[in-house]
Image (tube, rainbow, N blue to C red):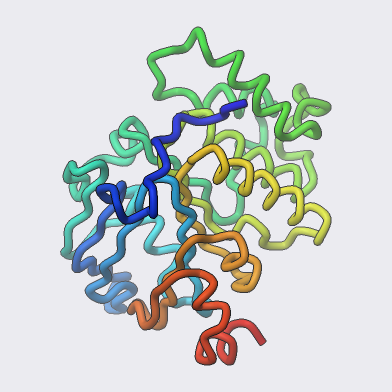
Length: 251
């Protein structure tokens, strides 16, 4: 069952054109440079993870892609089209969905209404109920709580809702920011099982995750950020075995 609108997985990943390409990205927060000349690429069907310590620029990267923060300089292309100066709603309409850190569910609305609002940018509104039913197949807990106010859900249930709501826009690129943060191990397992299912369907995911080991276990490639700079990049299995990464992030 498909819950998004994925592109064909590129054979060998790099045989195809990039889905997302970032070149020379610079972002400032006041007088602090949060991203410094960052460049990265994501190919269709990949799970790519960004790892690094708190404040390294991981979440800032996702916010820059979804255009909810201002860029100082650099260029971003998605499906070969420049999105550097797009509005956030335009980014969503082009096929990028952002599931932010902290869940950010609409607390005073029901689970069902949160999902409906996740599809606000779609033109095929007649297909929305079917997609909601599909989300409930992936997240049975949400089905049980479909009429419950989102603010009364547990932290794990809110995370499931945040992911499901992002998927309601039928993205081709899903930006996931700290999906395991503050969750019990059992719930983390459930969330990452869904991430694995999305990956198997060919959905492209750019993942920020505090648990570097878990992130790399579920990714094709990874980038290591430090003080707004990419210092290491490569296949996920290589990063798992890289002595620098193991010492700094894997314990």
